[in-house]
Image (cartoon, rainbow, N blue to C red):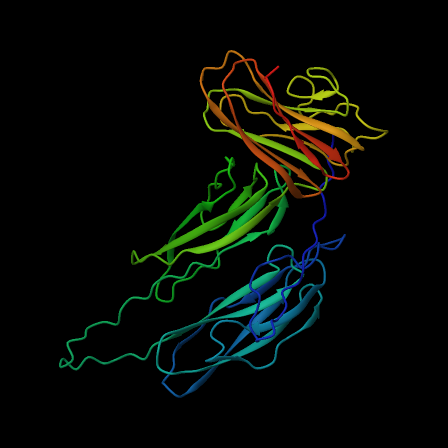
Length: 393
């Protein structure tokens, strides 16, 4: 069944009541039908250099509209560092392609090394929440030979990370882990180390290869994925970790996923239609339902099942889903396919989602080659479930 990508809606970043900013990155809206807006701020970072304590300095940055559609800037403020950095006049409004505006930021020095961020919200779909680092150095202390000090300490690099978009449909959509806004005040970043800090149980998706940005991450289990970024500068100093969170959803229909503990044991997920029988066309499984639909329910294909993940040598996951399931009772089985290399007890977990909500989960031990283990009966549209037990078929 051909799938039409779902449109996902997100809320704007809004100032909170205490004056702080919710810094989770969310796209403002989908790009327009014709053309794509693109924002650029130059220079980035904005570096004030060394300013004598108590004095004020100003820097001008250029905001450019470089896309082929109107750029809409909806918010602009100083985020971190607002105690010493000031935005003289936020520039809000619409900018036609190839137009630009000047942004003036001032810095009041206290003599120490200082960092901050200029935060800009726009309808650029690739960077809807743009952060421009603000940098200021510490006053140079002249060594007279009496203090014993030779050089000021090296500054630690700063990892800046996000994931775009922040919410996607598991298996069917991908996201990008973004780290190219990381910076070092007295050198350059030479290494970007991305890893998955946490993932849902049963997930096998791994962090894509790359450098600052890791593109095309496709989660294979519904749930929350947290990416961790650590950067290293040319002096060998390592940053504190930065974390970004991706929500992988289970869609709006009926979503069934299974995974198990020991590899080499081929567990097959089965979903039976209302009144269906195993290994017939009223049973969605590997032999008849892999990325092609059975004719269930009424006219059209949205009420037909799809087995869109089928795992043989590993630990899963396997996944069956129906976009708009017809009314009825659906039954979930797991078949311990005979002839696999692993023989023994194996814990198998089944999760059932309806309308994006987890409505049933259980882990069963299966230890019988060829066994069809009944797990649960799910009633649609109500979402009531009945756990099934008994002798394997």
